[in-house]
Image: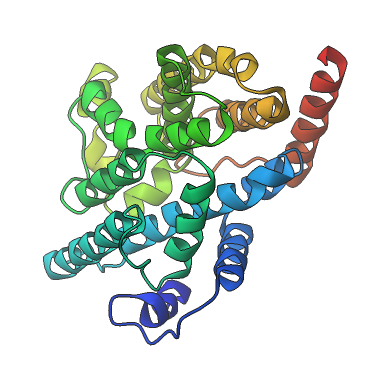
Length: 309
Protein backbone atom coordinates (compact mmCIF):
# COMPACT_ATOMS: atom_id res chain seq x y z
CA UNK A 1 0.00 0.00 0.00
CA UNK A 2 1.36 3.45 -0.96
CA UNK A 3 2.06 6.18 1.58
CA UNK A 4 -0.81 8.22 0.18
CA UNK A 5 -3.22 5.29 0.46
CA UNK A 6 -2.44 5.25 4.16
CA UNK A 7 -3.10 9.00 4.33
CA UNK A 8 -6.38 8.48 2.49
CA UNK A 9 -7.48 5.85 4.99
CA UNK A 10 -6.80 8.32 7.77
CA UNK A 11 -8.02 11.63 6.30
CA UNK A 12 -10.19 10.57 3.34
CA UNK A 13 -14.01 10.68 3.06
CA UNK A 14 -14.28 7.57 5.23
CA UNK A 15 -11.22 8.34 7.30
CA UNK A 16 -10.60 7.36 10.88
CA UNK A 17 -8.79 10.53 11.95
CA UNK A 18 -9.68 12.20 15.22
CA UNK A 19 -10.10 16.02 15.25
CA UNK A 20 -6.74 17.79 15.17
CA UNK A 21 -5.63 21.25 16.22
CA UNK A 22 -4.51 24.12 13.98
CA UNK A 23 -0.96 23.60 15.21
CA UNK A 24 -1.06 19.94 14.20
CA UNK A 25 -2.60 20.86 10.85
CA UNK A 26 0.18 23.35 10.01
CA UNK A 27 2.80 20.82 11.10
CA UNK A 28 1.24 18.25 8.77
CA UNK A 29 1.42 20.65 5.80
CA UNK A 30 5.04 21.43 6.61
CA UNK A 31 5.99 17.73 6.68
CA UNK A 32 4.16 17.09 3.41
CA UNK A 33 6.00 19.94 1.72
CA UNK A 34 9.40 18.85 2.96
CA UNK A 35 8.80 15.23 1.92
CA UNK A 36 7.72 15.95 -1.63
CA UNK A 37 9.00 19.28 -2.89
CA UNK A 38 12.77 19.79 -2.85
CA UNK A 39 12.56 23.10 -4.71
CA UNK A 40 10.36 24.56 -2.01
CA UNK A 41 12.91 23.79 0.69
CA UNK A 42 15.55 25.65 -1.33
CA UNK A 43 13.34 28.62 -2.16
CA UNK A 44 12.11 28.69 1.43
CA UNK A 45 15.50 29.93 2.60
CA UNK A 46 14.75 33.26 0.93
CA UNK A 47 11.04 33.40 1.72
CA UNK A 48 9.92 35.88 4.42
CA UNK A 49 8.85 34.02 7.55
CA UNK A 50 5.24 35.22 7.42
CA UNK A 51 4.74 33.53 4.04
CA UNK A 52 6.35 30.16 4.81
CA UNK A 53 3.37 28.51 6.45
CA UNK A 54 0.85 29.80 3.87
CA UNK A 55 3.09 28.55 1.04
CA UNK A 56 3.29 25.15 2.70
CA UNK A 57 -0.50 25.01 3.05
CA UNK A 58 -1.00 25.92 -0.62
CA UNK A 59 1.49 23.23 -1.60
CA UNK A 60 -0.24 20.67 0.64
CA UNK A 61 -3.56 21.46 -1.05
CA UNK A 62 -1.99 20.97 -4.49
CA UNK A 63 -0.26 17.77 -3.36
CA UNK A 64 -3.47 16.21 -2.06
CA UNK A 65 -5.36 17.25 -5.21
CA UNK A 66 -2.69 15.67 -7.40
CA UNK A 67 -2.51 12.48 -5.35
CA UNK A 68 -6.28 12.05 -5.40
CA UNK A 69 -6.25 12.29 -9.18
CA UNK A 70 -3.54 9.60 -9.32
CA UNK A 71 -5.34 7.21 -6.96
CA UNK A 72 -6.19 4.70 -9.69
CA UNK A 73 -4.68 1.71 -11.50
CA UNK A 74 -5.54 2.90 -15.01
CA UNK A 75 -8.90 1.12 -15.25
CA UNK A 76 -12.09 3.05 -15.98
CA UNK A 77 -13.58 1.92 -12.69
CA UNK A 78 -10.67 3.25 -10.63
CA UNK A 79 -10.62 6.50 -12.61
CA UNK A 80 -14.27 6.98 -11.72
CA UNK A 81 -13.26 6.47 -8.10
CA UNK A 82 -10.65 9.20 -8.45
CA UNK A 83 -13.36 11.49 -9.82
CA UNK A 84 -15.45 10.73 -6.74
CA UNK A 85 -12.51 11.59 -4.51
CA UNK A 86 -12.01 14.88 -6.35
CA UNK A 87 -15.70 15.75 -5.92
CA UNK A 88 -15.35 15.08 -2.18
CA UNK A 89 -12.21 17.24 -2.11
CA UNK A 90 -13.97 20.10 -3.92
CA UNK A 91 -16.85 19.99 -1.46
CA UNK A 92 -14.29 20.36 1.32
CA UNK A 93 -12.87 23.38 -0.51
CA UNK A 94 -16.32 24.96 -0.77
CA UNK A 95 -16.97 24.41 2.93
CA UNK A 96 -13.52 25.77 3.82
CA UNK A 97 -14.25 29.08 2.08
CA UNK A 98 -17.67 29.44 3.71
CA UNK A 99 -17.05 30.92 7.11
CA UNK A 100 -20.54 29.97 8.32
CA UNK A 101 -19.79 26.25 7.83
CA UNK A 102 -17.64 24.03 10.04
CA UNK A 103 -14.18 23.50 8.63
CA UNK A 104 -13.74 19.97 7.22
CA UNK A 105 -11.84 17.59 9.50
CA UNK A 106 -8.76 17.47 7.31
CA UNK A 107 -5.37 19.00 8.20
CA UNK A 108 -5.07 20.82 4.85
CA UNK A 109 -8.46 22.49 5.20
CA UNK A 110 -8.01 23.25 8.88
CA UNK A 111 -4.77 25.08 8.01
CA UNK A 112 -6.23 26.65 4.84
CA UNK A 113 -9.20 28.10 6.75
CA UNK A 114 -6.73 29.90 9.01
CA UNK A 115 -4.69 31.15 6.03
CA UNK A 116 -7.72 32.62 4.23
CA UNK A 117 -8.64 34.42 7.43
CA UNK A 118 -5.24 36.13 7.31
CA UNK A 119 -4.81 36.66 3.55
CA UNK A 120 -7.36 37.68 0.87
CA UNK A 121 -7.11 34.49 -1.18
CA UNK A 122 -9.85 33.86 -3.78
CA UNK A 123 -11.40 30.41 -4.06
CA UNK A 124 -11.44 30.27 -7.87
CA UNK A 125 -7.76 29.37 -8.47
CA UNK A 126 -8.04 26.51 -5.98
CA UNK A 127 -11.16 25.26 -7.80
CA UNK A 128 -9.52 25.72 -11.22
CA UNK A 129 -6.79 23.25 -10.26
CA UNK A 130 -9.41 20.57 -9.78
CA UNK A 131 -10.63 21.12 -13.36
CA UNK A 132 -7.22 19.93 -14.59
CA UNK A 133 -7.09 16.96 -12.24
CA UNK A 134 -10.53 15.83 -13.38
CA UNK A 135 -9.43 16.19 -16.99
CA UNK A 136 -6.50 13.88 -16.24
CA UNK A 137 -9.01 11.08 -15.66
CA UNK A 138 -10.42 11.28 -19.18
CA UNK A 139 -7.65 12.73 -21.36
CA UNK A 140 -4.06 11.62 -21.84
CA UNK A 141 -3.31 13.06 -25.33
CA UNK A 142 -3.39 16.55 -26.79
CA UNK A 143 -4.11 17.33 -30.44
CA UNK A 144 -2.73 20.87 -30.60
CA UNK A 145 -0.49 23.21 -28.64
CA UNK A 146 -3.50 25.42 -27.89
CA UNK A 147 -5.22 22.44 -26.28
CA UNK A 148 -2.17 21.78 -24.13
CA UNK A 149 -1.97 25.44 -23.11
CA UNK A 150 -5.62 25.31 -22.11
CA UNK A 151 -4.73 22.41 -19.81
CA UNK A 152 -1.86 24.45 -18.31
CA UNK A 153 -4.32 27.27 -17.71
CA UNK A 154 -5.93 25.02 -15.09
CA UNK A 155 -3.08 22.73 -14.03
CA UNK A 156 -0.34 25.34 -13.46
CA UNK A 157 -1.44 28.96 -13.77
CA UNK A 158 -3.79 28.93 -10.74
CA UNK A 159 -0.82 28.27 -8.44
CA UNK A 160 0.90 31.46 -9.54
CA UNK A 161 -2.30 33.43 -9.10
CA UNK A 162 -2.71 32.11 -5.56
CA UNK A 163 0.87 33.15 -4.80
CA UNK A 164 0.28 36.65 -6.21
CA UNK A 165 -2.78 37.16 -4.02
CA UNK A 166 -0.73 35.91 -1.09
CA UNK A 167 2.28 38.21 -1.46
CA UNK A 168 0.86 41.35 -3.10
CA UNK A 169 -0.53 44.06 -0.87
CA UNK A 170 -3.09 45.01 -3.53
CA UNK A 171 -5.12 43.14 -6.12
CA UNK A 172 -2.75 41.78 -8.82
CA UNK A 173 -2.84 43.77 -12.03
CA UNK A 174 -3.69 42.23 -15.42
CA UNK A 175 -0.01 42.53 -16.37
CA UNK A 176 1.11 40.69 -13.23
CA UNK A 177 -1.41 37.92 -13.87
CA UNK A 178 -0.21 37.54 -17.46
CA UNK A 179 3.46 37.39 -16.40
CA UNK A 180 2.60 34.87 -13.68
CA UNK A 181 0.67 32.70 -16.15
CA UNK A 182 3.63 32.76 -18.53
CA UNK A 183 6.02 31.62 -15.80
CA UNK A 184 3.73 28.87 -14.52
CA UNK A 185 3.00 27.54 -18.00
CA UNK A 186 6.74 27.57 -18.75
CA UNK A 187 7.47 25.64 -15.56
CA UNK A 188 4.75 23.10 -16.33
CA UNK A 189 6.05 22.58 -19.86
CA UNK A 190 9.62 22.22 -18.60
CA UNK A 191 8.46 19.42 -16.30
CA UNK A 192 6.55 17.77 -19.14
CA UNK A 193 9.60 17.68 -21.42
CA UNK A 194 11.79 16.49 -18.55
CA UNK A 195 9.42 13.57 -17.90
CA UNK A 196 8.56 12.36 -21.41
CA UNK A 197 9.88 8.87 -20.62
CA UNK A 198 8.03 8.60 -17.29
CA UNK A 199 4.76 9.75 -18.85
CA UNK A 200 5.16 7.30 -21.72
CA UNK A 201 5.43 4.43 -19.23
CA UNK A 202 2.00 5.25 -17.77
CA UNK A 203 0.36 5.83 -21.15
CA UNK A 204 0.33 9.62 -21.00
CA UNK A 205 1.75 12.05 -23.57
CA UNK A 206 1.79 15.84 -23.38
CA UNK A 207 3.56 16.36 -26.72
CA UNK A 208 0.87 17.83 -29.01
CA UNK A 209 0.04 15.68 -32.02
CA UNK A 210 0.35 18.70 -34.30
CA UNK A 211 3.96 19.28 -33.16
CA UNK A 212 4.82 15.59 -33.57
CA UNK A 213 3.46 15.65 -37.12
CA UNK A 214 5.52 18.76 -37.87
CA UNK A 215 8.68 16.79 -37.00
CA UNK A 216 7.39 13.46 -38.37
CA UNK A 217 7.53 11.79 -34.95
CA UNK A 218 5.24 8.87 -34.14
CA UNK A 219 3.84 9.46 -30.67
CA UNK A 220 2.50 5.92 -30.49
CA UNK A 221 6.01 4.48 -30.82
CA UNK A 222 8.40 7.05 -29.38
CA UNK A 223 12.06 6.33 -30.00
CA UNK A 224 15.23 8.35 -29.79
CA UNK A 225 16.16 9.85 -33.16
CA UNK A 226 17.47 13.07 -34.66
CA UNK A 227 13.93 14.23 -35.49
CA UNK A 228 12.73 13.40 -31.96
CA UNK A 229 15.57 15.45 -30.47
CA UNK A 230 14.83 18.34 -32.84
CA UNK A 231 11.23 18.27 -31.65
CA UNK A 232 12.26 18.33 -27.99
CA UNK A 233 14.64 21.22 -28.73
CA UNK A 234 11.72 23.10 -30.30
CA UNK A 235 9.56 22.45 -27.23
CA UNK A 236 12.36 23.45 -24.86
CA UNK A 237 12.89 26.72 -26.75
CA UNK A 238 9.18 27.49 -26.48
CA UNK A 239 9.12 26.81 -22.72
CA UNK A 240 12.22 28.96 -22.19
CA UNK A 241 10.61 31.88 -24.01
CA UNK A 242 7.58 31.67 -21.72
CA UNK A 243 9.72 31.70 -18.58
CA UNK A 244 11.73 34.66 -19.83
CA UNK A 245 8.59 36.55 -20.88
CA UNK A 246 7.37 36.38 -17.29
CA UNK A 247 10.52 37.84 -15.75
CA UNK A 248 9.09 41.40 -15.43
CA UNK A 249 6.89 40.00 -12.67
CA UNK A 250 9.96 39.78 -10.41
CA UNK A 251 10.38 43.54 -10.13
CA UNK A 252 6.63 44.17 -9.84
CA UNK A 253 6.12 42.27 -6.58
CA UNK A 254 7.21 43.36 -3.07
CA UNK A 255 10.99 43.32 -2.60
CA UNK A 256 10.81 40.66 0.09
CA UNK A 257 9.62 37.99 -2.38
CA UNK A 258 11.42 39.01 -5.57
CA UNK A 259 14.28 36.59 -5.02
CA UNK A 260 11.86 33.69 -4.57
CA UNK A 261 10.01 34.43 -7.81
CA UNK A 262 13.33 34.77 -9.62
CA UNK A 263 14.53 31.49 -8.14
CA UNK A 264 11.50 29.59 -9.45
CA UNK A 265 12.15 31.01 -12.93
CA UNK A 266 15.82 30.08 -12.72
CA UNK A 267 14.86 26.59 -11.56
CA UNK A 268 12.71 26.10 -14.66
CA UNK A 269 15.46 27.41 -16.91
CA UNK A 270 17.91 25.03 -15.22
CA UNK A 271 15.68 22.07 -16.13
CA UNK A 272 15.56 23.21 -19.75
CA UNK A 273 19.33 23.71 -19.80
CA UNK A 274 19.78 20.19 -18.40
CA UNK A 275 17.63 18.80 -21.21
CA UNK A 276 19.75 20.55 -23.82
CA UNK A 277 22.97 19.51 -22.07
CA UNK A 278 21.83 15.90 -22.63
CA UNK A 279 21.27 16.73 -26.33
CA UNK A 280 17.50 16.50 -25.76
CA UNK A 281 17.89 12.79 -25.12
CA UNK A 282 14.96 12.63 -22.67
CA UNK A 283 13.90 9.07 -23.56
CA UNK A 284 17.16 7.47 -22.46
CA UNK A 285 18.01 9.57 -19.41
CA UNK A 286 15.82 11.88 -17.35
CA UNK A 287 17.54 15.30 -17.14
CA UNK A 288 17.92 16.51 -13.56
CA UNK A 289 19.27 19.55 -11.71
CA UNK A 290 21.80 18.55 -9.05
CA UNK A 291 21.58 19.73 -5.46
CA UNK A 292 24.83 21.63 -6.01
CA UNK A 293 23.31 23.40 -9.00
CA UNK A 294 20.23 24.31 -6.96
CA UNK A 295 22.46 25.68 -4.22
CA UNK A 296 24.40 27.77 -6.75
CA UNK A 297 21.14 29.15 -8.14
CA UNK A 298 20.12 30.08 -4.61
CA UNK A 299 23.40 31.84 -3.83
CA UNK A 300 23.57 33.65 -7.18
CA UNK A 301 19.98 34.87 -6.88
CA UNK A 302 20.54 36.01 -3.30
CA UNK A 303 23.75 37.88 -4.22
CA UNK A 304 22.07 39.54 -7.22
CA UNK A 305 19.24 40.95 -5.12
CA UNK A 306 21.63 42.04 -2.39
CA UNK A 307 23.48 44.14 -4.96
CA UNK A 308 20.42 45.82 -6.48
CA UNK A 309 18.80 46.52 -3.10
